[in-house]
Amino acid sequence: MADPILHPETSHHHHHTQPLREIAVDYTPEACSHCPDSNSIALTFDHRGGARWRTTTRFLYGTFSTLIQCPKGNTSGLNFNIYLSSLEGDKSQDEIDFEFLGKDKKIVQTNFYTRGTGNREQIHDLGFDCSDGFHEYVIKWSRDSIEWVIDEKVVRREERKEGDGNGELGFPEKPMFLYASIWDASYIAEGNWTGKYDGSDAPYVCLYKHIRVPIGTACDS
Image (cartoon, helix red, strand yellow):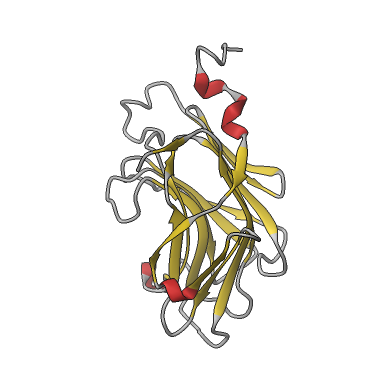
């Protein structure tokens, strides 16, 4: 094993975490309620649209985790998620995703982007309905690997390949915020991705709790 003092990216310190204390809300703050004392966040989608929260700092590597209970009812058309991104809306972003597709709450999609290029989606059967209760979702990101973990089970692992630094796709290496949002994605792929928006059970509430972020890898934003 490499000496972690010489190679800090191999150090177990990347997996030391702390509760999330502070967030920023990018839009519709009235549809996002944050309770720092209980470390919980509720995102609501209704006639106002959805909302998106993020950490106030970026992180370069580490373990990010949260318990999520997805919205109940007919959520067709909606996307709810937890993900890392160097900057939402930037066309050259690095990104690592868990995305729930409202048309089917028994699956989750994972993906990652490097310099704006994704197209590495995978669909995973959850084995449960994501709205039935809280389940733990974890992203473990290091210089050389990414793991997506659900209820302590690794559902996907990607490793940096030799040449990725100069390769066509590469590997995420930009400092990233932790983000979460709920939004109407029914216009994408003519509704084939998340389904057509139904709306009959609005308001839709996505609950996050016990959110944890890395210790020691925060970067000035």
